[in-house]
Image (cartoon, rainbow, N blue to C red; front, side, top):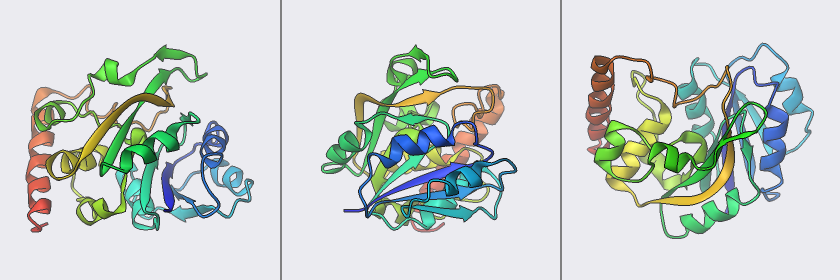
Length: 236
């Protein structure tokens, strides 16, 4: 069974080497890393090309933005199991092992992670504890537990995930999490499998909306409910 790691980049030269090294050591010869780059102006692409690894495939994202960047990677992935990855984290050695074990019985798994500062000093030992992460529609409709960099899922889910609605206010991991909660079997794995790096330039889904007022938050969630329902009914 083939693994596709879908990784979105944008001006990630500072951390991309460390991240790719942590991923490649866990992949087999037939697995792949699909990198969608959102027109980086630094040395990100040069650094990636320097790995000279046939498992790495680089694509240019034509539609700017984080969600479309990830969508570009997802639609070009050929694996049976898809892992989402940010450019600035570090995978712990057991990430693929625990994810694949979970995917033997579930359609999507969410692995725990340790929250760190930019130098990988641990701030919190468990993102799950920090965010009260768990499955369940009502909980995740209010505050999503589906942190993108911790997700892995079966390729069959792409029939519902893609295309991601162009006008979606929330990020891709909210979209994937909503569909998973409604239709698929989900497992939260409490083992930390990633160092989740926090720094000034994070392309993080957790930041979006954190300072937005209540009206926008309500609008965003009911749009998600509406668009997600249309997708599951095969109308959208």
